[in-house]
Every structure is written in C-alpha cells, then in structure tokens.
Image 1: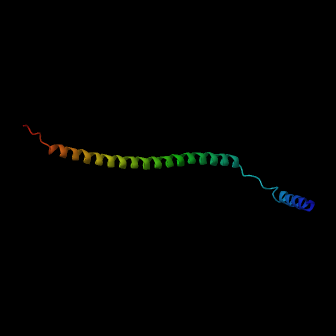
Image 2 (image 1 turned 120 degrees about the vertical axis):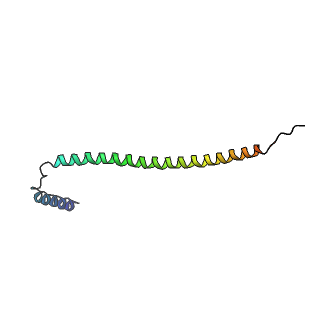
Image 3 (image 1 turned 60 degrees about the vertical axis):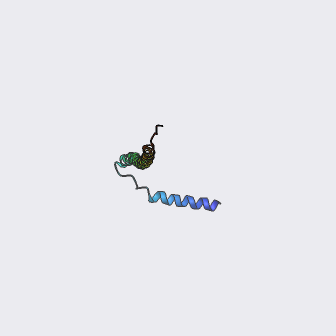
Length: 92
C-alpha cells in the first residue's frame, strides 16, 4: 500500500511541475459565466418550445374530438327530425 501512495505522490509531483505555467487566459471567468447564463436561457426556450408542441398536439386532439362529437350529434338530431316528420296525428 505504501508503494502505491509513493507512486501517486511522484506522479502528482511530475504533473505539478509540468503544469506550473498553465494559467487561464484573460477574461476566462467572464466567458464561462456568460456561457452558463446563455445555457440557462436556452434551456428556458427549449422548455417553452416543448410545452408549446404538447399544447398544439392537445389542441388538435380536442378539435378532432369536438368535430367527431358534433358530427355524431348532428346525425342524431337529423335522425330524430326525420322520425318526427313522418308522424302524423290522426283525428277521429
């Protein structure tokens, strides 16, 4: 176990020496914050678009069902009118 710890320490030391000159470019933090803010707003737009699509589908289904029921109701009313049209009261 001690050999493993020593190996890790050596590798971390080499990594530290190799990356001492590596620094973020000027404005890095500002660019990151801008990207995070922009990603949040895009997420909001994507959610709105998804809700809108589901709303559109639900509206189309509702219109289709209303049309079907209206046609069936009109056919039933026409049938009832036809039945009453054929009835005649006879007076004795």
